[in-house]
Amino acid sequence: MSNEYGSKAPLSYNKYLRVQDLIGLQDCLSDPAHHDELLFITIHQTYELWFKQILHELDAAIEQMSADRPAQAARTLRRVVEIEKVLVSQIHILETMTPISFLGFRDELNPASGFQSMQFREIEISSGLKDEKVLHEFREDEFALKRLEARLAAPSLSEAFYALLGRRGLDAPADVAGLAAEEQRKNYGRRTRAVLEILTHFEERYEEFQLAESLIEHDEYFTLWRAHHIAMVERMVGTKPGTGGSEGVGYLRTTLRKKFFPELWEARTYLDTKHGAAGCPFAGKV
Ligand code: HEM
Image (cartoon, rainbow, N blue to C red; front, side, top):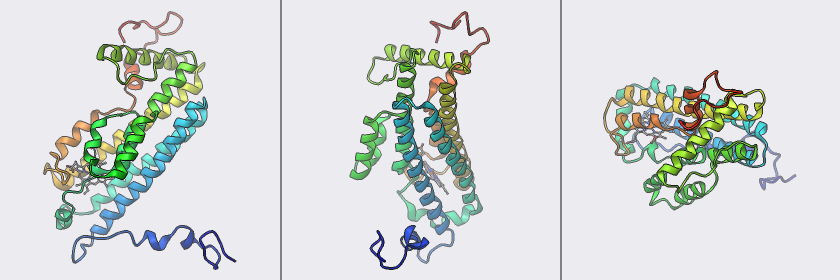
């Protein structure tokens, strides 16, 4: 009996999952191979597989929001958050490697760095951080450039979320890119007020509330990953410059300020029990 894999033998676990190919993909550069290099490669490849899955889910969540299915999108994002919890805890496996052991093969990696993770940048872009400057790092990588450019041009989670709120009667501009700074600031303020409305009337707007909570959790866990990665990097190499050419931990700390959905966080600052029947006491200030 032949199957879709072109073999006469019945399908097996190893064939379906292409285990032979998979376990042949870890090429150590150190020679003789350093014991800990396999862990280093395995961890990074595992991250890239989870990044692929996250992108698959983010694309689905964006589509579900665009089709006015906020409950389904919130469920999809719950999966993303559960994966991110694994990603945060996984970073600590690397800490079983001693700093001196890591230095035993670190030089072989130069100038490669996680800084060049295409899928990591794709997640940032599709979540809402549409920064064209990231393209520079990939200028000689046509495959990565095409994917990143396509994501920059497509709606992000953030844009899809505010477009959905707009269709549900809230004043929340979806597109703020390309506007003059003052106009952009006003639009961010309108978005923040729309979020305030949801947080205040979360029972009446439960679907939007659930979705907003899933989005902020995605943002939170991504930042937690950044924080754990920084602590691990400092424990491993102190403040040495990175293999990717950055200042290392000093640079990484600046990325903690990045937020996918700044309005969701900012709204908490303005939230007040006086919200409600009397309207937003901060109208005009946010
Ligand atoms: C011993 C382990 C590791 C060390 C010492 C390390 C070190 C660094 C350093 C110094 C940077 C700054 C960029 C540069 O290279 O100059 C960086 C960036 C980065 N690393 Fe790691 N890293 C490690 C493991 C990992 C792992 C397991 C991942 C998982 C994918 C990862 C993903 C990233 C990403 C995505 C960035 C870019 C962050 C950003 O620009 O926001 N790193 N890493």
